[in-house]
Length: 272
Image (cartoon, rainbow, N blue to C red):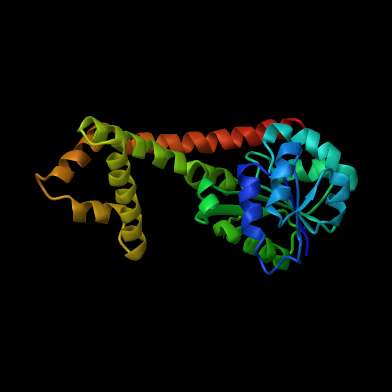
């Protein structure tokens, strides 16, 4: 089996690095193409990719094609790809907002999978949701799931609505965490801690809290109740968060990302 990755930016390169060691691929079975000569030179220096200078030399050879370019490059790319594709190939998009129907129509193919990864895939802790067109078989879907899991966890969802919804939770979610971390580090610095100590205090706290959450079947509220005592320091902090409607604001932020993902999909559909 040969897999082609088109686009060696952050996510494309992340998936390439994850899949390169998969026993599912033939030797030199990971083909990769990027429009940037500098990026191709970098990939060649790594020594473990079959790097191509143009789509004509690689796209017809691929069984599975991962498309990892910015959405605003999609139309130009699809036009270049369309004469080179065949009906047996499976196309996996990790582009935000590109709908299954739009990609299928633009490429003239039937087997399309839409996936929504997130940034922690870069460290093997990614969360990717994915869904497919009707023409993708169960065996083919399992193959794609195994490839997606080379960067962390993957969950199959029943429709594109849940791809857009997962954008608001796992896709954009790391940024919410970083926002919260930055706020806590700012507070730590204002309390007199150094930058290094502030980072250590905050990062270790997040890491430990996630580990606790994953080890026991206890809800976030249950953990908050366990940590906070009446009249204590934690209760004072939680009361402040509740008084300032932080729960509601985070909820609204997640839905803002969800609604924007839907809008991007609608914008691409208008082009059809």
